[in-house]
Length: 409
Image (cartoon, helix red, strand yellow):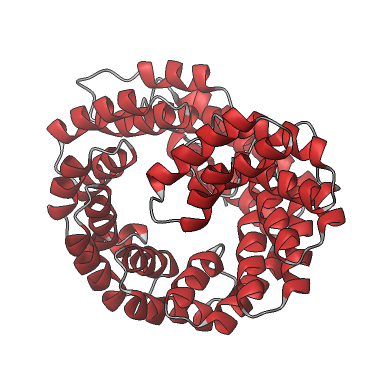
């Protein structure tokens, strides 16, 4: 038995000390082919330093091992070294095609996707191997070269590629058509994809496109498949809830949001929708709770504050509303809500400061102009109150109350 074979047997028994001994003997005594077979086996089980040691010894006799060395270097994070090994393979070498494919992977890993595409184009000139075409199609899809990607995927047999890579070309074509805004074609290919083999990602893409196209009933059938077959699928609850809401299935939509929040309690989008649906179901306490939770975790709380102030204003909880007042608020509608709360609490001067600040931004809002006219008159600015009332009447000419206000002013 060769030392290489003895090493493999020792590794199978997890006798690493004896395996190391046979490895050193193999380097001295085994023939080249046995060593090459051993290196390939060691590489396959993750013994990369040992495999590399053999490959370095075999480079002159077997130049193709430069590809293996490049892949090991890449695994170690030494991309520069990986390229040095690949550069050792000449363009007239039978291994040049393989080196181009590895180069493409390395450039893609480095974020140089355009360069990776150039290498794949060169590889495609040398070979019409389906995996080369598939790699080029994948690159084109990632670069949003949708037309080119569709043409490349169309050259491939879907079942063969699915068997080789686990990827459906129909799904990819559907995704590309969606990128082009050709949603009918996208739906057609995604439906083909899930008919041949169920895949949660493809189903989610299909359901989302159907939702975007306002085909809510059909979208919900596909979302339901994910909910039934793989409820751990990441992120589907949010869009599914939106789609259910469009069909006025609010309680079911809220259940989906709560299910999503059980996975990620800090998802602001889920919290905001859960608040809205709770409110629609007349559960204002839960609506408030979700908003307060969102306020604690939102990077930008402007939307949360607006919703909270709307809720407090409607419930006449003015004290709670003004507790939200702080200098960083930028949303004009939130500021207006604060102004209304200060008015309701007879803190007119604070309200007036807000109205003055908002006068320019809300100059074309009739409801604001109406409120502004009254507070201007209250503070003795009769000419400005008249101007605000006149502008209001230009927007709402049949308002008799404001016409009366103007006559009284």
